[in-house]
Length: 193
Ligand SMILES: Cc1cc2nc3c(=O)[nH]c(=O)nc-3n(C[C@H](O)[C@H](O)[C@H](O)COP(=O)(O)O)c2cc1C
Image 1 (cartoon, rainbow, N blue to C red):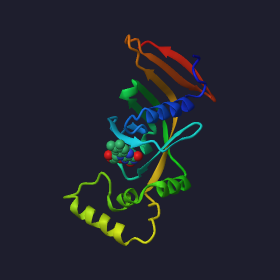
Image 2 (image 1 turned 60 degrees about the horizontal axis):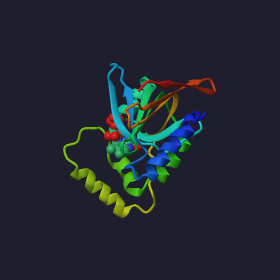
Image 3 (image 1 turned 120 degrees about the horizontal axis):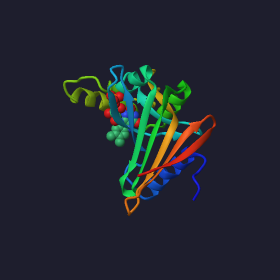
Image 4 (image 1 turned 120 degrees about the vertical axis):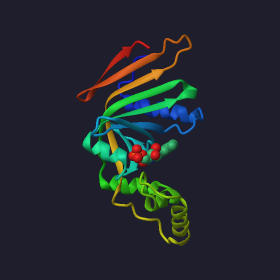
């Protein structure tokens, strides 16, 4: 089959395939940033949307990932669906998405997750979880309307410049197809496994 001309449409299909195959958390993806000290760091995030040219997820903006992508916007993402024998490796440039989108995606979160963003300064040292749990439970019991999107919570947009699709083969000669952005087009190269 000839390679799809639109790698992000292909990625969308792979995520859909993973969902249909009941792979756990099909939209979870490792997000890798590099700090000022040139040291990489990784964490899992949940992909929220695929746009024509970009991927979107959300994050608190005081966190390490947000600080690192602000000083160095070059990032990587890695999807892996072990039960399908598939992996997708993306490199690209991350920016903060428009405020309206952050509000929209915050409103789509369920209440426990919205309240978690409000009561917990993700990544900061704490002495125990009890105080946070008590505040979370108090807000859940007393809030009359869903909370507004905090100013320091946002959507992150990654515009890929390379996307590599890796597909396992029984004979171990796995298929690797690399897409490289070339202006508005994508060039494809098949790589040895
Ligand atoms: C399955 C899964 C999904 C997650 N989704 C997100 C997410 O969408 N956004 C986010 O900021 N953190 C998410 N997290 C938490 C991050 O992995 C991480 O702990 C947090 O963002 C702090 O990372 P940082 O301090 O490196 O910025 C998720 C964790 C897991 C295990």
